[in-house]
Image (cartoon, rainbow, N blue to C red; front, side, top):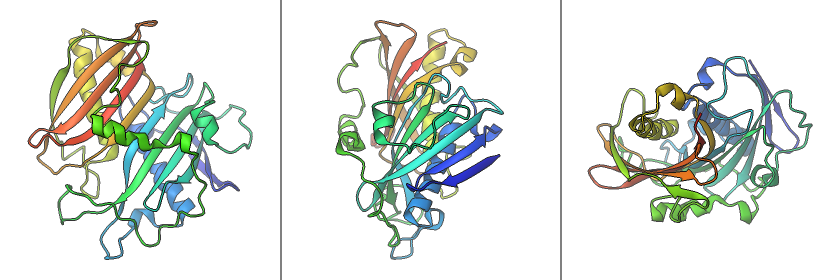
Amino acid sequence: MMRTILNADGSLTRRMVVEPGMCSGGSLIFGRIGDWTWEAVAEACRTNVHGARTAEGRPAYLSFYYYRVRGGKVVHPHGLTFGDELQVTSRVFQLGSQSVLTLHRLAPADLALGSAPLMPEEAYDRPHPDCLYAENFNRWIARTRPGSNQRLAEIAPPDFTYEHLPRLPNQYSPRSVGRAREAGTFCSEPPAGFTVTGPVETHEYTLDVVRDLNGAGLVYFAAYFSIFDTSLLRLWRSLGRDDERFLQRKVIDQKVGYFGNADPGAVFTITVRRWCSAANPEIELADMAMRDAESGRLLAITAIELESA
């Protein structure tokens, strides 16, 4: 059950009840937030996001380049269950002629937030402790070769309008993800207050064409969360922890950078590094990089700060 309201500032507010298709110990909530991003961009930019085409008539896709989610005390990625009631606010900002950034706030429905708009200052500097905040940086892409998910080009559809969107203040720009791409990690410097724990591990993952591809034949953006979580679970079990404890983990902050796609039959290598908080050993940070096993091409990176139960 969902009711959507278009606000005067162009943002969308949804009053909704959590359903089975958006809550789990995996990636369902990330997929649903991504759907809200597409809906918000379609509304804000007056563009048919789901059926967009380049000037040459090729399909254009609003791809995910950077995804960040920060969990709150009440609403966090793996803490939702059937029947929870939420108020979700989504607002789109311009980031040039071929990309946009969308902010989301997932709040308990009974939290008295009033009608104040979702501002970047709240999301980045003064987040409400009970709310989950998500940041999606999306770029338009199109295939350069039929049937191939490699060498995707940045091409926006001609009817994409963005000039009227609010600008994101420079201090909140997500473009620093480009430096993380060059470094192959979000943690090029040791995280403050964390100490390294254990050796670097490397896992292998074969692309699952049943679960990991979307309807356009691309690796689904939410599948990257699942693939990284598969490696995290392997590490978890190697530490003697059980699956129930894994399902109860609480994501404090997770960043994902998307730098490439893959074709059916691809095999990935995923490197995993782990740090523990010096002040609270239950708080850990996992840093992972996914590469194509054959070419070594960097496909994605993530940094997950979590609290283990």
